[in-house]
Amino acid sequence: MVTKLSDLMQKLRKIPAPLFVLLLLGSYLLANIYTAQVDFRDTFAVVFKEAFENSGISQDSVNLNTLFAIYFLFIGLFYVLLTELALKLIFSSFSSSRMLKRDSAPLFKTTARFFIILANAIAGLVSLLYFQYPMLEAYGTGAFYTAVFVLSLTLAYFVIAKTSVEPRYKGTMFTKLFALYFGIVGIFTGISLAVDAVGGTPLSVLMPTLIKFIVLIVLALAEYLLIAKKLLKEEKGAIPPPNFPPIHPFGSPDFPKEERDEIFKGFGF
Image 1 (cartoon, one colour):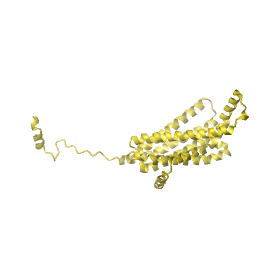
Image 2 (spheres, one colour):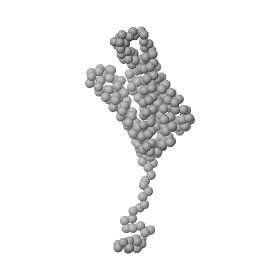
Image 3 (cartoon, helix red, strand yellow):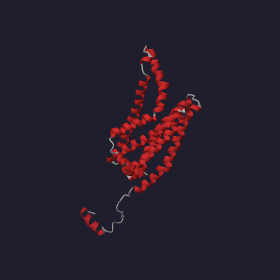
Image 4 (cartoon, helix red, strand yellow):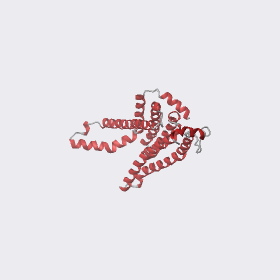
């Protein structure tokens, strides 16, 4: 499967980058189609209403649908900018350390964008259920999206590693990438959970974040035990042993002691 996906990425690499970025934007909009509406309705619409009242502007003179469209587009653009910046930094870091081949930037970015779009599309289609069953949203945007995103990125790594990662660094790069992801997401999720718990938030409200945190831990352990350890073991086999000449403490048989004595005789030895 990895081979077929790798061949597909080679074909998709020919798609102009701006078009791929537009597809990435569309996927983020789809993934946030429900949460953006809820956040706007519960938070920003209230803030705008208070601002209108304080400034003496009639709320009827402002179209909230227009404000929502601007807010919705801003969310998508923000995530696209964050993604493109992360891809640039990751590629620059790993290519400078010779883990990634320097000429693999187009394939690396194409593959990463494709699987992020795939994860967002799956999460976005599932989020359509939230309009009918709102109680699923807290778990879907947390635990479910995290699991889909991690699995998509794992598959993306294997596709990239097939042609673009140096064999002797496949395990090291995988471990560093996912340690970075789980570290950042885990820290923010843990801080959010701790702040809400200290603030007296009921357990029923904390449950979605708690489940997301548990899912993160389970995924991190699974990624390490099932994938990282195996890749690190294979990586050791891919590192050629140093080709040093054998050391002969009493002189090399090809260089007899008599000849060495002749060489150093002129130096007084």
